[in-house]
Length: 500
Picture 1: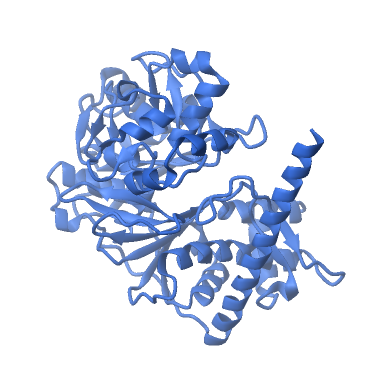
Picture 2: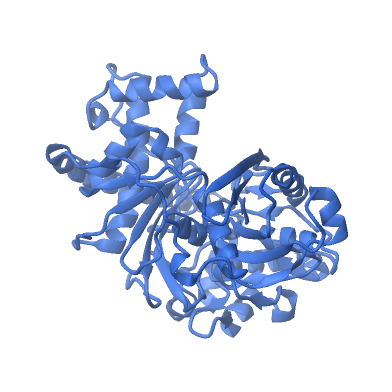
């Protein structure tokens, strides 16, 4: 089974055999476009080029694939003009904050608390209701031309099979799905200004949507009619791909962004509306995951590498950054980096937040900033962790995936801050692997009890008690700085409005 993950900056594929072993992998990148401040788009045609490239590599494998199953990045949205899927624009991504402009009108028209308890999605520019309202207000002519509003995975699925379909897992991350009935929520649709017939039909994550068309077979080198399974959101598939599917289990992922996800047996809603609740899978019975996503994970180290280490390139710059950070004591001698380069999602839901360096003195250099960058991301993850667990302590081993696992120092800082053991997993690609496993289940190749991968154990990091005490205080100071930063931002916005 091919597991195909459509990410923010690249498309990744894994090919699993009948025993769940990885037989082939492939990856192909594409660029995130920022045409205006606060915008973050992807050209779906570039994604299609990447998809066909990785599938051609899968087709060349010695292990013939029996099907394709999907994992898709959450929150993408764009209009298409016709049933053929002609794009009317680039796709908004999770990092796009332009819908912030209609926030006030949206909350004035909505019972936001009731909406959250039906959809599991707090009111935020990430979600479709606010984004669709933005499109209707800012570009009503284009919105009127839209035959369908789709996400990237919907479009790629259609390009391969000729069928329009949106799986329940990914649909639950839009803010338009009613979690109890697993149908489009009428009030959310009203607030968004969209009719249900202008959205793809809903299907199970394990549905076989169709087979490869002749055109898709020619483009990919795979056989015509190869079964294509709907799959799910990248967060849900990453959980399955790391062996996390039982209520109470938690996985942390840090790639471009970051997330903390806890599996639950029924929808759970935070009284403070700081976290989301999404569908993990609807097969064999519905299960859910609650948690929060941060906007700035690997993005923060990428910023530090580009701005602080321009004299080095690629991996050499990252190695030097890690060496520098390791030479600095915890706390970076008072330097804090609040890494809100792309605003923030959970638990603050503050798309207008900006990054800040604080505590600089004459003695500080780029090594201090490198350490502060790692600690800043961890503090953001700790914000989400506290929203999920509060003073409660889990007894489950936390699993960690993503690019962070290649930086032991960063993993240790996370372990010391949370004060719990963490297993760092080396999975080929957890989202693609989870998608492949779900596809194997959909085609009857494995049972439901094997939906979670039997992953190889990774190294276990244990917290240093002294560092844990230090980092908990460090995290409190980070939160105080963030509150001050937010207040300062509000004051500046007020002054701008007064001036204008």
